[in-house]
Image: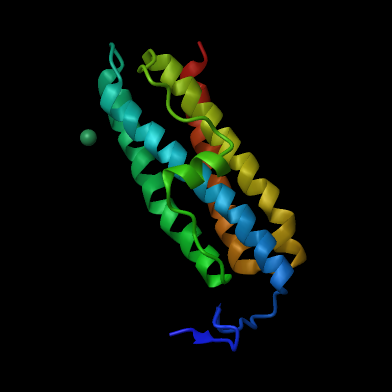
Length: 169
Ligand SMILES: [Fe+2]
């Protein structure tokens, strides 16, 4: 139970992990953008798993499942890092819509290779978001966040490469 101040407002217990309040807020803000991007890309990838058609159906249906499963598993550690830094983790479509750097999935399912192009752009965008948070974590000596960002960058850059390869003739 959080203590109440004399004014009646709920006061959270203080956090003293060696990262300033300002740095924790900045990193949590960056991770919130990463969470929104990851969740949005997760949903688009699952959408494409359901709606892909054409001669590449088997390959893409299975590949998209692998990718959305990885993204689904990635949202939890990002959200829980935000909590460890003392901030609330965003978890609504409204918040994700406001925070995400990538667009929502198209209303009408695109052709198979257009899906691949959209996902490649998505993974590149999430990589840019993750990379933009790095200087904040670095400056604050926030190794757990830097480690998480490194793991996410590795996945997004590798997945973007695989998707890009499908688009080459
Ligand atoms: Fe399925």
